[in-house]
Image (cartoon, helix red, strand yellow):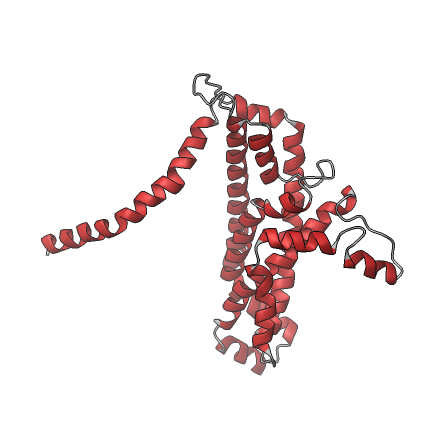
Length: 293
């Protein structure tokens, strides 16, 4: 039996070794390389490991006002996008979980934005919200509202990015939550109906507590993806006007390919990683604590 077990183990390792090699080459090596680079003066002009900087790149980030601006903009973006997408997605998922007509048509319409490329989404909405040629400003003026410079006004630019991101990514939230709703056991709902529970009571005390594991996964995934948002900002505003939409992913891009400072960009990337993981851990801890209660 031991020989057979060893034989099975060796066979398993032979099957998974190509995948592990590819993962090491594509994921592990770049991460290790960027981590090492973050402790040196490594730029595209002088791509050498001859000057050891220690934690200077990390400390410089904390002293850089543009880093703190991008940090603030990113937190605002995530704080707006994730809760709004959850509320809208949860509401639509609850509606779609009922027996309604043309459900397949609704599925098709709701999944279209999610499968579109962020670049295509950015270009489409950049045209729709164009200050002079966009249909949105045309309709606003026809309804008696004022002219809105969506991407040229710092008061509106970040809000426009938030709304576009919600338009595209809310489908992701709907599908995950709808899958969780359809997998719930029917017995608790039947018992609640017999006991005279209303729709709101059923939602608050039965549906939502039973959905907590699915909600946790959906929120955690959206937080991680939201922190990595880059495409929309690059296509629509390029961090502008000024630095009003300069989220941290785009700030890393600017530091790398405009500032040509790969070591500084690597340090900021790992700070973003630590920040994201800290928020994910806190969020997961709070949600699981509520679930235990």
